[in-house]
Length: 258
Image (cartoon, rainbow, N blue to C red; front, side):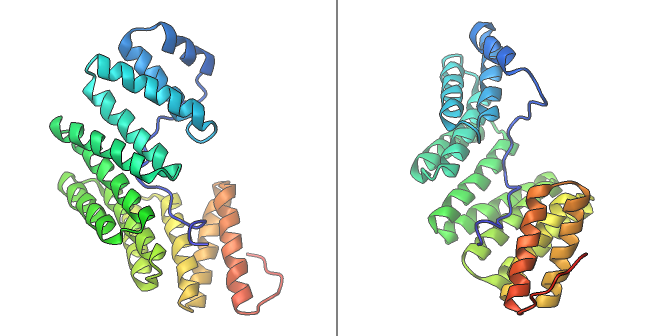
């Protein structure tokens, strides 16, 4: 249950293709200059990231090889980070950490602050999945400090959400709600209603576990209406599932509209 309702806007920075022609990208990956070739291979890796893991891994590793050969350090950082995220998602946590630490070393050498803080966040995710919550909190706390220094409110919001996830995974419900609320407030500062709704959905799920049924229902319904108006079907379904669980827990087996 907790995994299904996890907060998903954490440190993922893949390129969106917006309908670019895949055949053109593949052709660019074969014929263009090293830098253009790397860019095309990275975009192909991003495109196939969730739909075809073998292809994603092939394109990212090919891009990494070319970047290393041509000493394109910035590209190496991005590719290594994505390979770390890829292996985190695949459950190969030791391999993921290996890629992330390689990316971190180069990012720090290059004084690349944004990639450095992003990598710390993904290392936090890695430790959280492993169940090393002390290390996970250390990484996430570091990201908050770094994002505050550069005035990145979205990064702060994501970091609070990540800590909320960690406490949720630890079944420390009160702490999870506290950090989800902090994250929601930051997203509201940016008028990011969708991310705020994700936090309300997450909080709603945790709230019913602490028997705060009215607040849980309010959050889930509010999030549902936002997702419905934005036509975000997956999260709309998650809210409905959460409400069904909430009503079941209260023995409220009735038809409702809202």
